[in-house]
Length: 287
Length: 324
Image 1 (tube, rainbow over the protein chains, first blue to last red):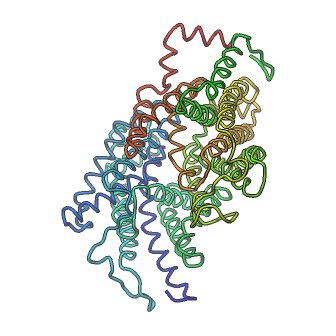
Image 2: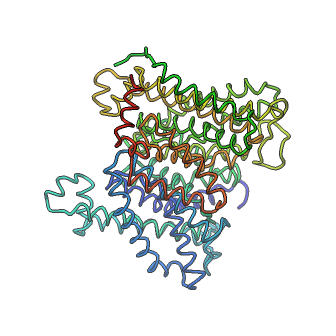
Image 3: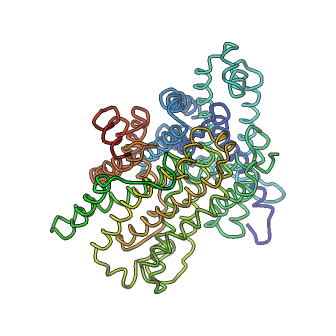
C-alpha cells in the first residue's frame, strides 16, 4: 500500500469486521443463552481452522465446500461439551464453568499442538491470492468473503431465532429459563442446541480466519480476545452492536498496523479493549 | 467470632514452625539438589496458589492474570540488577510495583462482573508479553528483540540456599497471611460478599474496596514469589513469563487441593510439584494431561483433596482443634 493512503486500511478493517463479528457470535450466543462465558471459544475456533486445513490438505476438498463436513463435527463437539461438561459445571458453583472451560481450552490447544506441531499454518486455496478492485485499490478477495460471510451468517441466525420454533425456544430460554420450562420448552435440550449452533458459527469463523490469517495452536487466545472485545464494544445481545464492534476492532487493527507496524497491531488491539473496559464497560453503544 | 485480634494455640504455632525449621535445614544437610528444588518450587506454588485462592475462592474473582503480577515483579527485580539496585530492594520493589499495577488494573477489570472479569484479566498477560517483546528498558543482555535479561551483579552470585530460604519464607508467609486475612474483618466481609453480594452491600460492606484490597494483596505476594523464582532462574524472558502455564499450575494447585478451603493450596501444591516433575518427561503432553486432571477434579470432587479429607472424622477433629 502506498504512503498516505488511508483508504486501503480502512476498507480492509471494515471487511475484517465481518469476520470478527462472526467470531464473536458463538461467544455471545453461549453467554446470552446459558450465562456462561466460554473461555475455550477461541481454541474451538482454532480447532475448526485446523479441521478445514485437514479437509483441504488431506481430503483435497475446498474448505468452503468442506464446511459440509466441519459444521456437523463442530456441532457435535458443542453438544458434547454442553452435555458432559458445562451442564454439570453450572451446578457446582460460579467459578466451576470458568475453570473447566480454561482446562478445556488447554486440552484443545495441546491436542492441536500434538497433531499439527506448533508451526504456523494457513488455509491456501486457489482464490487465496485473488484480489478485486474498489475505489481503484487492489484488495484481497478473502477479505471480501469475510465480510459477506459475516453478514450472511448473522442475518441467517437472526431469521432462525425469529422464525423457527427452535429459534424462538432458544430466545425464550435466554430470557427466562423457568418460564420457558413451564411453557413446555425442554431447556436442557435447548442448551445443547444453543452450544451446538454457537460451534457452527465457530466452524465458519475458524475456516475464514484460517483463510485470512496464518494460525498456530496458541492462536485461540488471540481469537478469544478478539471475540470478547467485539462483544464488549458492541454491547451484549445486539447483533448490530456486535457487527459494529467487529468493524471497530478490524479498523483498530488495520490502522495500527498501518501507522505503527504489524508488530504492534495486536498490542494496540489489546490496549483498546482494556481501555474500553476501563472507561465504557457497558460498550460503546450501551446505555 | 474474632475481630482483627486472634490467638493461635502454641501447638498450632508449632505446627507451622517445626516443618519450616526442618525444611530450612534441607540445603545444609547434604540432601540431593533435587530435593531442595522440589521444596523450592512447592513453596513458590504454595504462595501463588494461596493468593489465587484468596481471589477465586473467597472473593469470587476468577483472575487469569496472575502471570502478569509475577512477571512484572520479576522484570522489575531483574532490570533493577542492571541499574545497580540491590536485589533485595528490587525484590520488594518489584512486589510493590505488582501491587500498584493491580491497583491500577482494578479500575478497568473490576467494572466487569463475574465471567467478564476473567476474560478481561486473561488479556493482561498477553498484552504484557507483547510489551516486553517490543520494549527493552535497558540495553545489553541477551541478543534480539523479545529476548530476556540475565540477573546481573551480586544477585547472580547469590548462594542457592539463600534463595531457597526466601522461597520457604514466602510460602509459609502466604499460609499465615491467609489465616490472618480470613479471620479479620476483611475475611468476614469477603464471606458476606460471597454468600450474597447485594445483601452484604446493603449491610454496609464496601464490596468494591474489599475486592480491591484482596486483588492488591494477591498481586503483591504473587509478585514477591515470582521475583524469588526468577532470582533462582537467573534470567527472565517474555514468552515463558507471561505464559498461561503459570495460570494452569496455580489453578491446578488450588483446585486439586480444594478451592475455597484454607488448607487446599497446601495439599494441591504438593501434588502439582510432584506432577511437574513426573510430567517433565512428556513435555508435549504435560499441559494436555494437566487440563484433563483439572476438568476431572472439578467435575468429580469440586472441593478437591480437602473435600475428601473432610469426610473423615479425624481430619475434622484436627481442623476443629487448630481453629481453637
